[in-house]
Image (cartoon, rainbow, N blue to C red; front, side, top):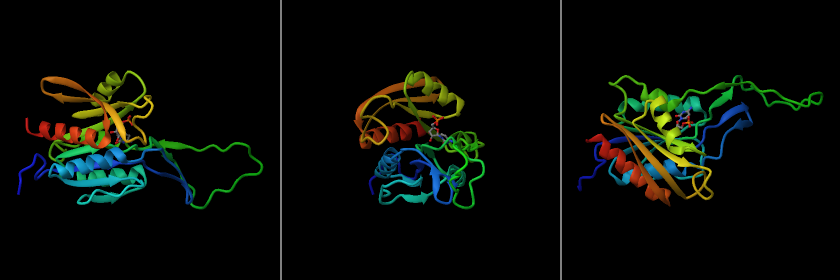
Length: 227
Ligand code: C5P
C-alpha cells in the first residue's frame, strides 16, 4: 500500500461533552457538538493512523474505521483515557469535559420541594484528563499530548499558560467570542502553539471548515512526532 504520515501510529482522541448525573433522569452538561473531535478522528484515519475515539454523548456517527469508546461522565472518560494512553503515539483532548460533577448524585429521582424556593447542589472538581495523561511517566506517556483551549480574549496568552500548566506538547486555541466560529459551528479559526527543545512556537490558522482545520492539526502533530 501507499505509505502515509500516520501509518503505524495510534491516535487517541477525546470528543464531545461529558454528562454528570444529578439523579437517574437529570444531568449537568454543555453544548459541545463533538464536531471538531470527530473531524480530527476522520483526518487521522485519512492520514493512515489507527484511531480510538473516546466520546461523550453526541449526535454524530463515528468515522468508519475508528474504534469508538462511548462514555458519559468525566470519570468514565478519564478511565478510558488512562487505559488507552499508554499505547497512543498522539493523544488529543478535544472533549469539553465538565469541570465539576455532583458530589453525591441522588439514587432516585429528586422530588420538587413544595416548602423550599431554592435548591443547593454541592459540586466537586472532576479530574483534568489531559493534564493527567501529560503527567504519565515517559514509559506510558503518549509522545505527543495535544490540548484545545476555548478563550474569549487574550487567546494566545491564555493558550500559552494552558500549554505550560497542563504539561502539553501542543495546544489549539480558538476565540469563542467570534460569532459563527467554534461551538456547534462547521467553521473554526485557531492558533496552534507547540513546544520544542528550542522553545514555544505559534502559528495562526485562518477561519476554515473544521474538516480542513482538523487535517492541518493532525499533519502538524504527525510532523512533530518525527523531528
Ligand atoms: O482548562 P480547560 O478546560 O480550558 O482546558 C481545555 C483542554 O483540557 C481541552 O484539551 C480539554 O479536552 C482538556 N480537559 C480535560 N479534562 C478536564 C478539563 C479539560 O482533559 N477536566
